[in-house]
Image (cartoon, rainbow, N blue to C red):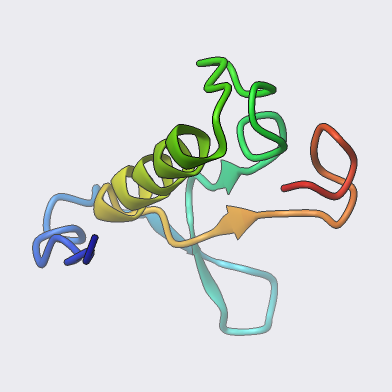
Length: 87
């Protein structure tokens, strides 16, 4: 499957959606997507997708939807799962 980002994904962002991060000049969206419990091993997500293919497709769709809504910050940590590190 080929993903094409929504070209209007930033057009409807409210004023102040992107905010400066400290003095770095980095602009982050007001919301980020944390990839903890919905991006671990198959069957551990809230939808209980038991097989790997449907689990990973669900993860992709969540990320695409968030990106198309203007979210550009995705938070991952090396111990996110379950099991730890799976995300």
